[in-house]
Length: 195
Image (cartoon, rainbow, N blue to C red; front, side, top):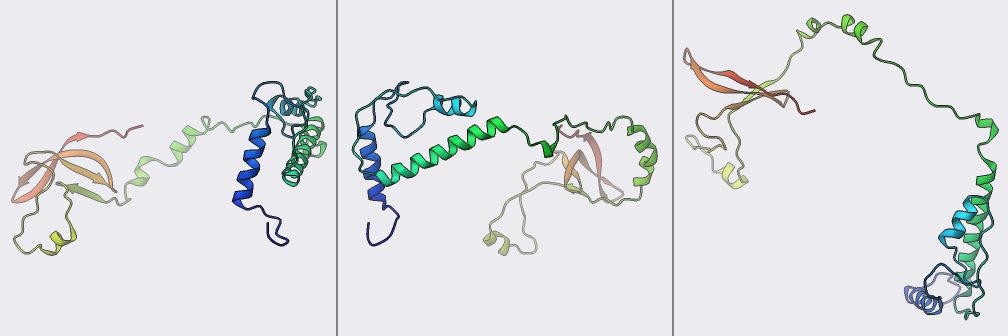
């Protein structure tokens, strides 16, 4: 470290990790008393407000990273203290006692809502109805080459049903007809929305 900078460089961090791995005991349920980290059993005991089980004695380790280990040990002890206090305190009295939330019953009012807004109230609402013969994808270059008389192939064959869309939502399919020299579509299939 250079100057008064308290931060560790990535190389120093890696060296500390390697030193900790070399000094740590073999993994297993028994832990050494000199180890600063809490295992799962100790954390569980602290969360339940119990004293953690005693640790086994281990040979002293070299103190290469005493500042980092000291900070880690301090953070663990503060966490353990916070967890032990929160388990014993419970819910503060000023918040009151907990009770389940009661949801409003909407089934009782469903008949009244249907009577208040009959379907005939929507008869004057305008919808956008589109008949889609087919689709295609063109490159910008191909669009720029379009001229009067150009033919654009679509993804549907002659005689295939066309899509009927209301406000962009596919609701039906139909057949193209000619009636009095006008194109028209006869609805062949009403599609039900997927629930």
